[in-house]
Length: 401
Image (cartoon, rainbow, N blue to C red):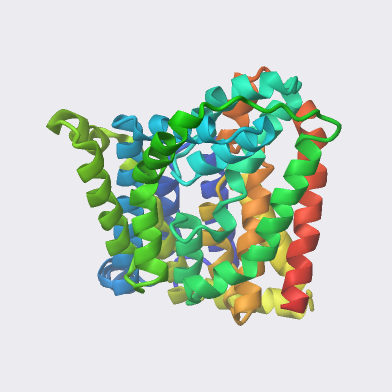
């Protein structure tokens, strides 16, 4: 036993976590220090080094941390080499329908999981949104919503990779369960964003079509290489991420200074630390017995599994403003009560993700609303029904698939 009982340790640790989140401390620092505090409060001092050593040397942790670093490096290099601008411009030049451009551009940029990355696509869709005469609320909604429809099924999503690692599920099984949700999200987003909006078609010069297709395929090839390596060749995500980096370097041929910029960025290390902190918090919660204690409390209350999977991850994702944070906290809390089969792991992932998607602490949401000068109340007019339909779809998938 530690210095205090499990309930007190849990309350104090997560109150500390809440304070750090409120103060906008980096998520990696927040999760790691919360794990350290929880271990000091709930474990014998001599047991603590073992948990830290096990976490640091565990193959799953090493793979997760390496994959996260590689994906973030790729994202930063896409931005610094301006290959992402070429990719988005090629797409804009190929697609004639302005509605499709407004839908696709945020999704394509969304393949680069950069914090606040919706701000990258906002300027790119603005001209097309103006052609459609979209108001500020719908511009903001379209940019946020379509950026995030890709992540439930994107195999290089750090959140999916983290969920698979924490619940011991295969990445493929999680993705397969999210396909219906992603389809519904895309359909709902299209209907709400473009309801009673007239279609505008752009004139495309035929002579440039081949050049634009070649440019799009070339700039998209690093991401395609990663997906192919994971989905077809069954290569570990941590290796696939660096394959993507290698392909991008061959395409962009950046200078040494450009290549070094991501390594000087705090963001890449902060997100990587978050992956380690999530695994550490999970292992401390289990090793200390806090997970079992919390599970007994839930069991005594006879709370339905579906209710737990809906409320706990969604609320935590909303409060923390991060799907990774919501999942990192939810899994160890619920591990003593639930058996994480594919349906439970899938529902936990999507509810944490949807809770985060609509959170006012969600960086993409805040930055996009600020860019388009859109009051949050006007944005939530579109977000709330979209999230509600997505939640219902997730519940149906849990029961039917």
